[in-house]
Image (tube, rainbow, N blue to C red; front, side, top):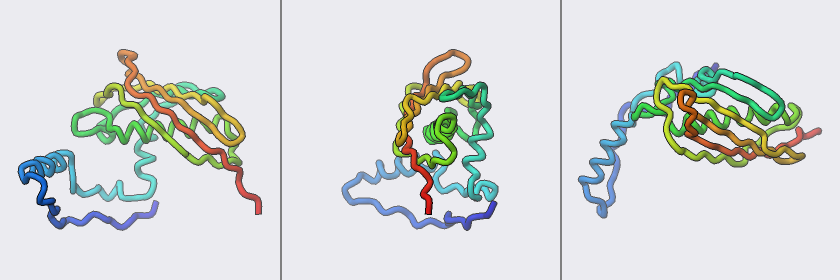
Length: 177
C-alpha cells in the first residue's frame, strides 16, 4: 500500500467567529469538537489507501451466504466506536455499504459494474462497545439496471433492532471498445 502524504497540520489557524454568535456558545462548540478528537493526528499506519475498508472488514464474520442473502456477525470494537462508547454512525454506514455490495454481488454478474446511487440508514438505537451485531442483508429487487438491497442490524444478545438501511445500485455493463 502506498503511503499518502498527510494533509493534517500540527499547527492550526484558530477559527473565526461571526459577530452574531455569543462567544460562550462558540467556546462550548469548540470544547465539544476537542472532546470528540478534533485535530488529533492520524496514526501513520492508518494513513494509507484502503486502510479503513480493511479495518471494517476485519470485524465482520460471515455466517451464511446464499443467492440474494447474507448473514454476518459484526464485532463492535473501539476503533469503530464514537466517544460515547457505541458504534459510530459512520461505521454503521461503512458496514452497510460493504455488506450491501457483497450481497448484490451474489446476484449481479462480475462483468457488471455496480454504482452506489443511494444509501440510507436509520439509527434506531445504539450498539455498545464489545457487543456483537447480527446483520441480515437481502436483495429486494434486481433487474437489468437497478439492484436494491435491504439491511437489518440487531444486537446479538437481545435481538433488538438497532439500525436499518437500504442501498440502491445501478448496474452498469462494462463498456466494450
